[in-house]
Image (tube, rainbow, N blue to C red):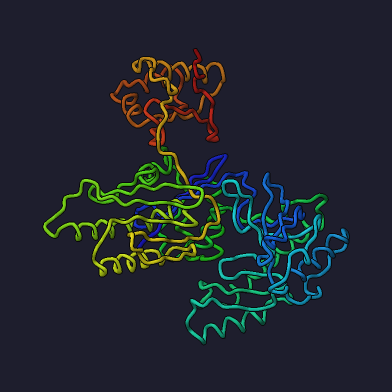
Amino acid sequence: MTSELIIDAQPKEVTIALLEDQKLVEFQKETQESKYSVGNIYAGRVKKIMPGLNACFVDVGHEREAFIHYQDLGNQFLSLEKYVKQVISDRKKLAPMTKASKLPDLPKEGSIQDILEVGQEVMVQITKEPISTKGPRLTGEISFPGRFLVLIPFADKVSVSSKIKSSEERTRLKQLIQSIKPNNFGVIVRTVAEGKRVAELDNELSILIDSWNECVKKLQQATKMPELIHEETGRTVSMLRDLFNPSYESIHVNDENVYKEVKKYVALIAPERESIVKLYKGNLPIFDNFSVTKQIKSGFGKTVSYRKGAYLIIEHTEALHVVDVNSGNRYRGVDGQEANAFEVNMGAAEELARQFRLRDMGGIIVIDFIDMDSSEHRQKLYEHMTELMRNDRAKHNILPLSKFGLMQITRQRVRPAMDVNVEETCPTCFGKGTIKSSYLFTDTLENKIDYIVNNLGISKFKLYVHPYVAAYIMQGFLSIYRKWQLKYGFGFKIIPSQQLAFLQYQFKDKQNNDINMTEEIETK
């Protein structure tokens, strides 16, 4: 299996698509202004104690207060909180972490009101992004993840991933990390550290410790609470950190700054694979060029077709996700209904395993498969789904089919499910049901071009239109496009975009910022 990462960097957001064997399996969007991403660390203030829940609400600057349970405070919370108070109390001198006194672990069956009080300043980290009506979910166990290691202040323990099976390698890694880590720091050794040299691990450990020190400095200088004191690396680098493997065939980026950031990171973690990072310079939108747009439009939405007329109905509710499997107009062969149901269900399982990753569906998922009488078929379907989700990075639990033919799955949810609206709203009638003569559409475009060139003084820009419209404008030797060039100059380009509706258009300048030229909605 080969994997490709396609990164579409725009001024306001970065979109990332992961392809496995040319098939879209993960799709993530991150706005440039996102402050409440998983991994961000805040200096917050306790707003409300909830003894009944054994939890409290913390103000981290979000419109909805963040939630933290007693069990999420972490074993080292008392030591951390003492150090935080020490740092805040002295704005001039920074207390060295290695000499900080360590307090006993937090009692497992304790009460939050004995540990925290309203108005208390705490250092917390986001574990779940705000979802629907809920604010962020927090933890008091601060961690700094790297490619090979995870640094945990005050843990003072070295753990090795259980996926490293060799006892000799586990012992080597544990002894190695214990010899190089400073006092009052714990380390988790990740699976990808297997076989790595001491220099690589020591280098990353130094980077993670620097991140902690920078975080403490910001805490010391914080003049008001709440305040963001550590921001997790961008989604691009985060995905690379967690997903990167030697099977990556290429990483395509359409922005030079993001390209340099990605290339620098790949050179750090795998110097021999640096060449796979490529800067895309084509005229077509990067997602159109790599057939991502088409897969997005076919992969999202309420109805998803997957095999010979069979399809899924996927609906999202506040409490859970519901999936209905339908055979559609499939022909039932000589083997009968049971064999047909089994084949449709097996295909549905393959598509669902992809959809879970693609949409980042989390929480409770209930799947209504087509009824099967054979207990052997039911068991095979359960085993097939288990095998398909083996490579899913999110923690999950799968139950066998119930008597009603329902399969229940829980999947870790750390951010809202990805929802892409694939329906196209008519950009010319604005829902009224009538439009101006479509024959005059090119005249409208020419008027816009004339305004941009002669009134705004912009000579270099791009006009994005639907591929059908682009084909019409550019057909023939003396095309409409050629006539426009002769009249308004050769500085602008017409680029077909699959993301646009039929009579929709976009003007963008050299920096890829929108030139707002859309017509105002006519009101009656």
